[in-house]
Length: 325
Image (cartoon, rainbow, N blue to C red; front, side, top):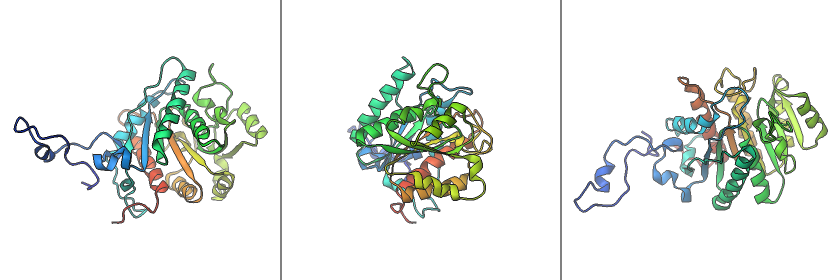
């Protein structure tokens, strides 16, 4: 077992002979903690962590297959079995410390009320987190708008959103609400520019919005096939600070079947990692979210893939600070 993992409980006070001491309890074969990466308390304390994981199991407006409310829990559970050493980065990114917050239980009064509550909560968290790297786990994609708006508000400036997604999410409203997952990027155009990558499911309305707005630049999935020129195109459009939102349906359904609205085609694993590493090396990525995992009972590979992706994002953010073997 990795030395970064908890292998024993080592907290508590001596009971003066009335019960087991902390040292006695410490020798028992406890399971890994139910936090991101299963890190021991010392490695996951908020005060000493460089990254903070915020689960938001919110689901209210999904269009087809449901289950994104179970995504954050599945990601955290799968992450407990990831190898902490990353051979690409030559170290263990977990040494920067990764704290996992309790899941936010948003109001059920309605989508608007829930996202307003999330935006307020996210602003409060930013005030406490300082320069820690905040990673939000969804839940449906509508939650991204609240986080992006909070980032722009706290920073007092426009941000650039790098959106990896199969869908543009630029609808004015969808199925009776302007706070749908299909409207997430439309909700932020007054405070952010959006660079959408991997788009391959889009309505005529969204095409017109993109064509008519200087705040939107879309890179379609079929334009990514010939070579890597799309990576340069995307990077040229990204202006600091950058907020990364990763809808897992960006990936090819062969890799990521566990999502509500899969689209044929999409990114592959290594191509996507090459791009993301460049983004973190060349731009100031201040926060991110990973959304729209809808776990499939009995099929755990997609859960592990997303957990590994989140760990990769943390690794790229703190590249150079990982521990060498």
